Image 1 (tube, rainbow, N blue to C red):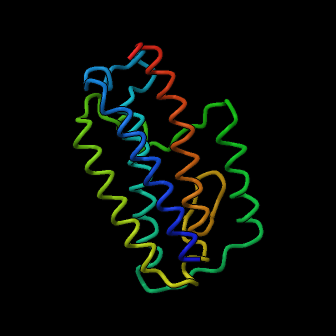
Image 2 (tube, rainbow, N blue to C red; image 1 turned 90 degrees about the vertical axis):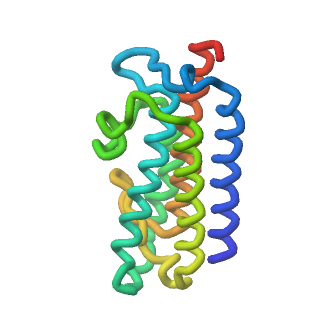
Length: 179
């Protein structure tokens, strides 16, 4: 299980690295530009992704703070995790929780400050997950607001698909601005 988690961590880190490399070519002005009052800028999309991962980590730390081994991921949890792919590829909007949308997303952000913060979070995530026991990794350590509880594999699958979904939004914004 740890080897699989390590490979998934490498994949989500590669995905973040590619996104940062691609966006680093653009000005902060372009990255902070909103297409309308009701849509997010590219920096707000990035902040949303970073905050989603931050609050997930906080949830897992709290859940496992007493050294508890959560119950093993259920069949229902595995089925719901497999539904991520369908939902995140479906072209409908999914309402984000308030803590990672709306006023939680600043109007202006520094690309490099946010990137540094996000990469540091990933270092902490890697350390946290790889120091868990096999039983903890297989337990329901993550809770998605729609799909419910899942294990470390489900968590990292969510990270990949969530980023992939928002990369489509970023691509649309880049083409809109002709950046």
